[in-house]
View 1 (tube, helix red, strand yellow):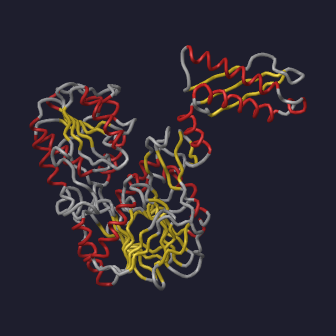
View 2 (tube, rainbow, N blue to C red):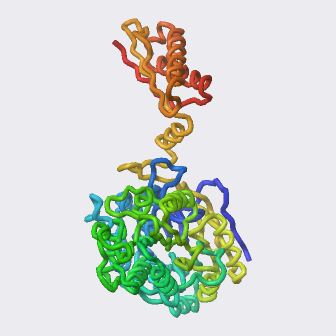
Length: 564
């Protein structure tokens, strides 16, 4: 057996528009989220998923992180289409920001298409996106790619694995999946179709790695519903349940549990209503009674309401976070109320979730998490389900995806135990030749990161973020200099120091900076005094050195120059 590892390489890509079958992940390997995958055949490209990730403490001011589509954008005339496996933000969210850079048609099954249309309503280009619906279990031919959608189970309706047939062989791209015997919403996974694909021969399986460390199976949604019925029945006051907004099966379970205990169920959070609309349009959500609005929920007796809230990952603008801060316009939780966390912690979100937990506990609210009761089952396959997938498909090549580095390596080890002849552990930007010949990593392409900063998209590694980090760690200073007609200072420089000093020390620091700036500018020769850049640089250096001496830090410094 042969394992090819792409960790840490820096070589430039050698792949050309030559004959062959290629796989190129540009998001979703080495991380959980931001899935963005390319398949190439003889110079033509197929995109699978185009998702987002969310910002954290390392990306101040950034809520949404996007993969950089530059590689395929430069080859836009060779794009056959963009295929979506399912309706999760980390698989389709980037379309709402970056679709114009690709401009290609989008292929999706009905629920995913309905959800995408709702998201695109908030853009100024949504009416230009060509969305082509593919029926469940349907097929479509896109240039050299013949695609078959294979129904799976997950935490959202209509998750699909893709059987991608090419003249070099068949690749199965798993998407997000599990094998749930009682999923509550939709059908069970089409195991017989997977077995038939395996019998026909599978060249490669590109497969979800999220739960590779979890033994056994991931559990069934029906078990969560039964637990919620019991737990809600044990509570005396308000109950709030937080979960992933896209988990339609969980919304159904919560609604049924509320109804079973004589309570009304309310949706609190915009994204929940968006999912509700898409699910109702496609027939996937059938609550025992209509959901209550967050405005009306506030008027219901405490023992007659269950509220489903966004914010399971501690998102700062989500409903539960606002409630915990006592900052929500309609909903209040009080001592004696209960919050049920019906979701897993995504790695990296622990601090944000912990802050919300502490705020809720500070209000006297009871918390129930998956550590306390079985109130969540994952939408991703545990080890026994992964083993079954390998037994069904029997691929020649295993390519782990959708996981951090430790997940991918463990998945590769599991594939070897399942007697897969070749495994390739990629990272974002790894150009992999799957066929013809032996599979191999042939090079690397840039796999950058973009970020939504307010209303604009910026380079996450660009000057804006570098300057923002400098200001966070070292503060900022602005010096305004007014020069007379001879190029001499017309008065003391005006100094603003942000994030550095306060009170009396602020005045001391300003005095020192003014003294140093006057001294350094005064040393400039006559010919340099008429050079704006020279004056600015002298003042900038003076500010930074003065603050280093006074405070121990060199702030990000801007100098404004005015000549009379």
